[in-house]
Image 1 (cartoon, rainbow, N blue to C red):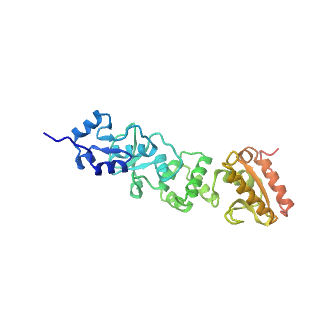
Image 2: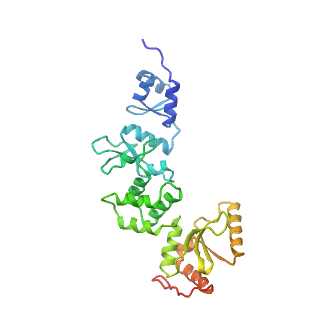
Image 3: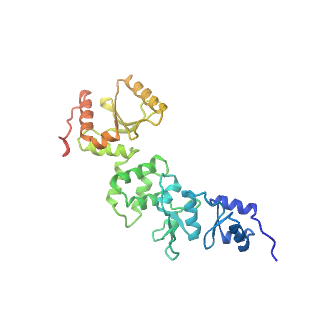
Length: 310
């Protein structure tokens, strides 16, 4: 007759590291047999998620717990991929069902908690973290292939802004793949995004600056202590600041912008500010105002009308 079993400290520690999840094999290795697991389930303390997987804290769900569920159900070797991998790396993504990559010779089935994909290009050799997830560059390329231009710009700029990778590393990974949908678009955007930190900055460069023949501004230049400006036309001492938010998050942000603008004004620099509605909705009006300001301050060029200009 077996003695009544209680979870050990080591078992609780492992469960905590796996967001409250345990496999039958893990429990057994730490002294908790099937009958002990069944007793905990019957007492409503634990919940059986699937054959061989148990949740020690039902009701405490999260994207990270979903990723652990997928990883433990599929087993090793494997790696979380897609949007779930991006979320694990620190991107703001909310995948419904995680993708899990496995070696090409494994044949586990997809479940309600995991979409299994077989890896043919070496993603697993570059996996990292716990639970294992494919590297940032692989995840960006996998997800980016199904995005539109602006969403892809946002993904690439977020990767760099969050300091999770660099444009050069993404470009290196891109060139290491034989097949990539929209490869030319990826290459163009990786070249265009040098110095750009947001989707709005990219749209300004594309629809305002380039389309209307304005001079090329410098990006993310520090002109005063502790600040960076989005676009600088140095010869004309004109600054363009772009803000995709609806207003400011707090008063401190507003005062910081005022102090920065005032400091630049003392140096005879003009600051023009535009929001998302201006750049996306009225790029021709923005171009006319920017070009007029540049000409007033010495630019000898002329703006070029685009097909959308009245």
